[in-house]
Length: 93
Image 1 (tube, helix red, strand yellow):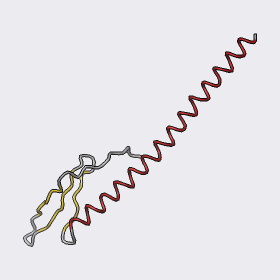
Image 2 (tube, rainbow, N blue to C red):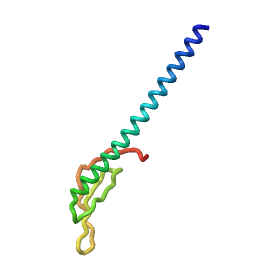
Image 3 (cartoon, rainbow, N blue to C red):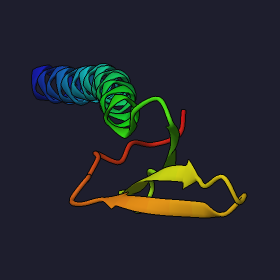
Image 4 (cartoon, helix red, strand yellow):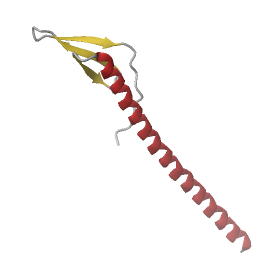
């Protein structure tokens, strides 16, 4: 009887530890996603600032491709690619 109670208590403790670790991992993941999103926004702001006043930032964040889009007086659009502008990918929450 004592052995069964001890085994049940050990199993209960193990389940509680695993559940606690899972909950902690979820909190860490949520905080990381938030921080990555903030970092990506700051990076986009810096890249847009680098384009200047006469152009607009063209972005494909999923592929890490960025360029400054300029419109000529004739209405044509010219793209000036920003090299090696990698960003961290985050989940969409």
